[in-house]
Length: 470
Image 1 (cartoon, rainbow, N blue to C red):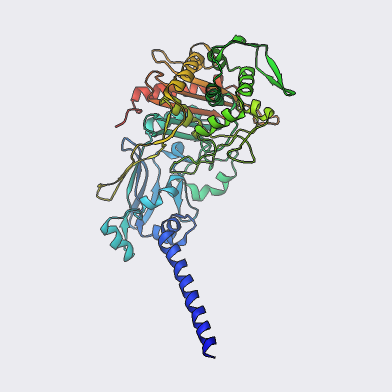
Image 2: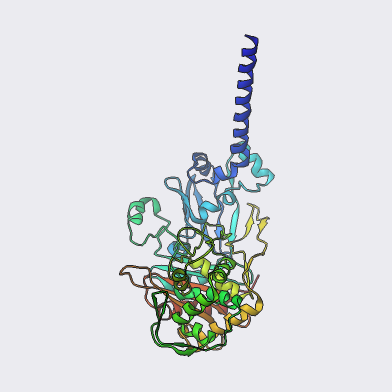
């Protein structure tokens, strides 16, 4: 009898201990994550008594702000759809998305709260959240929006030296001001306006040749050797075609002219291990450390970091086809890494956070993410990208008095769909201040459609000197 009571008491004690562990885990360790979850009803209730902080661009322009008129609160977005879906939304009816969601802990004063905010939060008193200053330049964002307006796609502009995101546009967009009233109509629109296309995955086409180039260099192949392009080549029964006969080319002119047969041939000679190592060095299969989630880029469907590729997949992947999938955000980082002598900096959208009294709460510290290649290897690829702008497929991205380095891409999405138009670039080539990636979905030829958009954005960025660290 006594033994049974002891076992029962022990069982109750064990259950109490496990419940306590669970409470500690969810209420302490995971409390911030739970609060930040847009489905959390407590967070929605908190919105009723916390005046959500404002979001500003790098120059202090208001991007999002909450007004309080006699107790009636309204979240306003002065730039309209120019910043969507990057900014996202925050409504009691539909929760939150975009930066409004990922930065909610800052905007509501939950992350690193001041002593006053702690007391106000404990007593559930009305209070004010923190203001967030982004790295985005409002005028450059407007220019990117204008360049893509009427198209489906994305534009990403980075400072390659710091990783700052200077502009990030996704099209089509939507107006966040009347989201609740027009929700059903917005979600029914074609081409997914609520989806950030800068973070979506697409076949990169020939823009990936800059990655393939690194694998070829690592293999020890002589990039000055001449190769004759006759317009097509057969490798292991697979026909690889170019849009024309390029004739005799070396690495420099092959990248500039975007010769598929050259890269398929040399990638097969370099081997799958060098190609896969180069892709991993540039961040394929890795999580991009941004304030918003970006899907991982991949070489094949089955696994993020395959141990090997068969010859057919290797040759197709060498010019960005096969099963390769990546995002405009990642391609902008790849361009930025080449621009920054091989070092890819941690990308970031948040510059600093200020409390209600405008005291500094948080300042982003610039730091490297990956060292993808050496300065010499970067120089080799940059030289070919310069040739592409001066006399190759990227000429429509050229600027007077500024040397641009670029690579075009025209990727096949499959079926009867029109090609995606890509363009990655940086400038000035000798001392880069800005790097861009442009994608026009089903837009056609990258050098024709995406290049002019990139050119205008680079020109705007350099004229405003937004690539200079403030």
